[in-house]
Image (cartoon, rainbow, N blue to C red; front, side, top):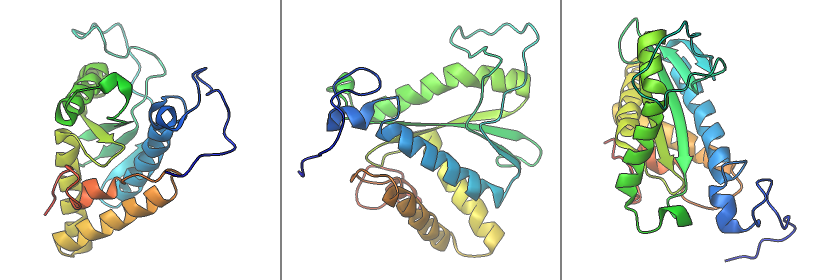
Length: 215
């Protein structure tokens, strides 16, 4: 590969700055860049078919609620990545939280990608689902992607419904909507300064990436 020049010796997290580290650092690395781009793009697409769409909305304040899951986020500043009313059902607020992780990080050595996706989905749900369901009276769906174009089962279900709803709204074919959504994700990936597979493969189900096929 091409050598990377003019980079700092040390990352902001105090680890040595290397390309593999940049791919998985949670403090401003490639997963963070992908996370923000994907979050914002999905927010734009959801405004086409839902109302009351918000990016990083505060969750409803707690009033002494007790949760079964000890991992539930109880912070007064707790936020989901996206809220959209009417996505799954007409009157329900749907909350989504995006996670992008690098499956080739050393901490995931010898772990299957399918299992990692499920692990991250469970982690997100353990943090947000109980609070969203019982306090915000909404639904919660984790949107988990890898940096090399795979999506978790719940994210795949979300993407299929999103494309279906967009096709119905725009009165075009489902396959045409999948193609357009894939093009948008390709545009996002072009603005992220690392050359790896993009989330468009998750939407379009192309390239044998292991991502969801939406056809």
